[in-house]
Image (cartoon, rainbow, N blue to C red; front, top):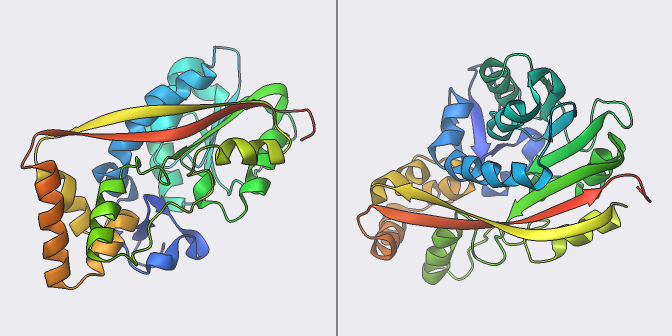
Length: 283
């Protein structure tokens, strides 16, 4: 968490204020949250953003909101589509807000949580939340807030890694970890992480015309070390788990994963559940 040192703790690739996600109990302290994010999670989320933005396909003249923007990968794509002055973004992390502001001058970036968005009703034509819903304390409240700030008939869309289906970026890690310790806690229980659940949440939040799809991405790693090193440094929930292991168990996990991936180069695949819905009716 942010402290006097100016450092932040990252869990699951998302800064976790007030303990969100702190069940893993450890993290990596890094001076630059955006750089930390880019080491692993950001490589997958940037690839996902390229496909996620096409689900909405915003056009010039529209106003759009990026909820849980992180360092601004998706936000930047929205700027390319509609211009900086038509884009707003929020994130609970002070460090990520600062990073997004520095990277994307002209964008209205604010520190806020999805459950309490600092905008009037019907402000935006489209509201997007990439890899956010499964981290929310109250996913229903977050989706209802997204609907509230979107004009009637406007687009509300969200996506979450398919962790329950075993195709999230960290799924190979958790499979190998469970092989060594069946009691390992993974990320499969998060909101929206199983097939159909994100669409169910959207309908329960009063969104209309809910459509569900699955987005797939791939990331090329030149070496196994390139994939493993961020985890060994403690980046994200997977890194927190790795750092919590004693040396023999950590070495066994590394060996098991290296036998799976090889020395490299290799392609790592991941998939996310995505919903596209309309705001207004029943929200």
